[in-house]
Image 1: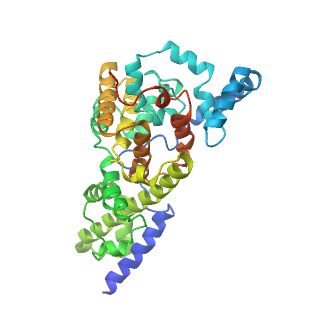
Image 2 (image 1 turned 90 degrees about the horizontal axis):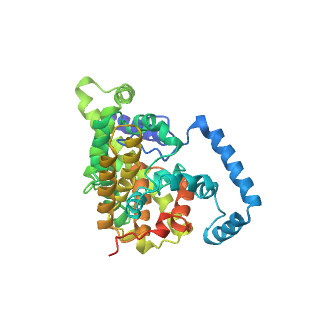
Image 3 (image 1 turned 180 degrees about the vertical axis):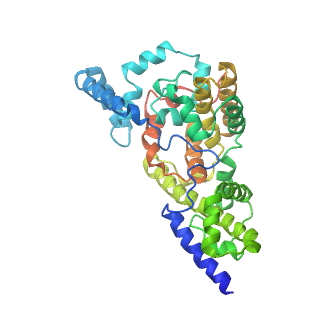
Length: 367
């Protein structure tokens, strides 16, 4: 009994350290999403200079001023630099030079979130300056280094077999049943927490624990577990990752839900009636396909195949850009455990700006 109590106390300490970011924070989940923090430091200053130029143009361009006034009335908060950049004259020149068909533009719109956040056009297949950094971005954030790894990721994302199953598990097994408070690891260990319907979350926790060899050895040392107790200790370690994954997701979900309701006018009914959070995978497939082509890992036809497949699958499930967006945001929160604060400007542009593809293109193909 003393041994169990000691381990539980140690687990409580470890969970506290995890929450503080001091232990067990694996930098990559199975798929790390670059939209959390991707603006290359080496050309941040260049972006800032471009912003200054754009702002100066707006001061003297009456047409820009009129457009800004329109945007101010539409947006829930003042217009962002992101919108100014995406609608700048330089961006228009780039889009006109790399124009695609209306049908292709619709397919690209399903992968709009990450490119928009990274200040890339979603109206064309070609990429701007960030495309020059595609190999490093894919390698560092997605472990994509060649044709094979690019295909592997896209084959999963295009059919929602990436992180979406984890998000759906938490959403269906907990959120829809009214469980949005943090889970207590002690309840999990002693069987007082129902793990039914959370198989994908558990499997992801096992995979993560297997990657954290150094952290597990430290865990063994701190708990003074013997070699005979190694398997039991590993199971406890897995449960730590399991609880951490759920709690990080639920914390981010509460944040995302508050934002969607209070900043973008979604209703509780809309959010609870979302059929699946597969949009989190579908919405990233197009981005990965474009960057994989830019990196030279895929041919253009194959990249378009995955873009179209993800778009068609998404259109089969969702009824509108609005529903698709909500599913993407909640899926991102529950699976990725990341705050939604860094995509507010992106959502404002996509959902409200008159130049957004979400405003100019039908969600479903019309005959």
